[in-house]
Structure formats: structure tokens, C-alpha cells
Image (cartoon, rainbow, N blue to C red; front, side, top):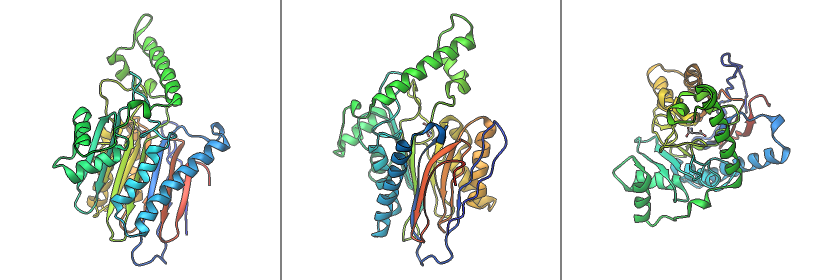
Length: 358
Ligand code: ASP
């Protein structure tokens, strides 16, 4: 049975939607399943064509089905997360892999991370430019290196040493993202001029001192992520992203930061986040949800909603998907929409985009 509850939250004119799906009482002995997200942001029905909505829904469903097939046939939560995320990385609709947003210099720099709940092993990469599936490289860091995080050129050399598929950066770049970058540059330059008076230019200081203008409503976060629970009762979480449009200077967001954009611990939950990464790092969103559950004995729903409220209190926007070993799922966000869905062995199956739709 699916129960959907939504609460309007006050503050900053945004609302907090909590998508609560309790596990069925009639579940089989070993429930398994997964949830995915494809980013949060100003995603409203009035601005989306029926064709676009259908395409997003189909992509989320395909990712859920790919992950579910892995779990159904006895695969691990990690395998399911990788299968779901790789499909989304290949889909240009999302800000990960092909179709990732462009940096100020017009290229794609990709971040990804993965974590396992059983023993909290983790792997992450940041600023990679030529690896087709950054989430697979993050897994290789976890499985085949003694490290947790590799960045840039070094991460790419590690990928080469393992024989990973290398693609030109142009493979990731799309026309839609080029136009988005141009608009973002014009907006940021206008905002910097407004902030600094006539003749001011968009210096690095200006950019970072006007976050509310620089990261305005037109920017939809399109990071992808997944959390999964396998037949053995193990949790895993993953995230993959191109970061933020017009980013500079090697900027890295929360998605590859273990504890910020991603966390998994069998004792509490698996979490994958999307949103304005700087705020998610400052709050330590993903780990804070697990910590609230462990120490304050909060439910996953209470803990996840509290973390997003904490982000909102600082002025940030975004959302998370969080999953427990019992199969409870919380998907709070404080943006108008979040691409999201779940599929579980007890019959729960849902894909949703907007905050106010049934
Ligand atoms: N969290 C990502 C970042 O800040 C962006 C997103 O979620 O789309 O890099």
C-alpha cells in the first residue's frame, strides 16, 4: 500500500514535501528495492510539456527497473545503485555523465560517489573529464584502491590503469547545456554589475558573494542518485553529477563528499542528496540524517526532514532520498519539484516529479 503525505513548510516561500512510503505489513521475509532521484529544483508542471514529463518519468522508471532486476536476481545493493545510476548518466536529460552541465570554460567536470552500509566502505571521484561512467570509477576507487576519493588528472590516470573506457569531453556536452551556460553567464555578469555598481565585473569574489543571485530559480539541479536495499539486508547509496552550471576554479559540490551528498550505514539508513551543494556540505546533510537516527532515535522521515530544514535555514535548496534496512523511504525536498521514484519487492512502485501532484 502506498501512502503519500505532503506538508507545506514555511520559510523562504518554499515548501517541504515529504513523500512517505511505509513498507507493507505483508512484505516477504527479505524485502528489497531501491529509490532514485534525478535532481530537485524549480520543476513545475506549468513549465513542462507532456512529452518532457513522459520522457523524465520513463527514464526514472528505466533506472528503477534496472536496479530492481539486479536485486531480484540476488545482486548487491551496490550493484543495483550502479546499474540505476549508469542508465541516468547515459541519459542527456540529467546533469550527470552525458548531458552534464558545463563549467565556465564550457567543458564537463564530473563528480560521483558510492558507499556501502555494511562496513561503510566508500569511493568517490571529483572533476573527472573523460571517464564515461564516473559512478563506476567511484566504485573502483572503493574496491580497487586503498583510498576514498581521487580527483582530476589523478583519478583519470587511475581509470586508465584499470582500462576504463575514455571518451572525449565533447561526448558529455549537449546544445541544451551550452545555451544554459550562456544564460547563466549573462545573468551572473548582470548580477555582479548590480552588486558592484556600474563598471563592476564578475570577479571570483563577486561570484561567491552573491549566491542567491548566482543560483537563482532557473537553475534546476539534475544530479542523479540511488539508494538500495538488497536481499541480504545491506544498504548502499550513490550519486553522480556535473555539479553547477558556470562553475569555476575546480569547484566541487556535495555529491562526491561522503557524509554531505551521500552516506550509507546499515545501522541507520542510506542517503543520496541533490541541491545546492555548498549548503549540503556545510550541513553535512547525509551523515546528519544517519546521526540523528542513531543518536536521537529519530525516524528516517523526521531525520531527513530536519536535515532539509537545516539546509533551508541557511538559505539552501534541494532534497534527499533516504532508505532504511526495514524498507522505509523518505524523500523530503524544499524545492517545487524533485525527480524521484521507488520500487520495492512488497509492491510499492512510484515515480513522481512535482511537489503538489498526487
Ligand atoms: N548537488 C550538486 C552540486 O552542488 C548539484 C545537484 O544536485 O544537481 O554539485
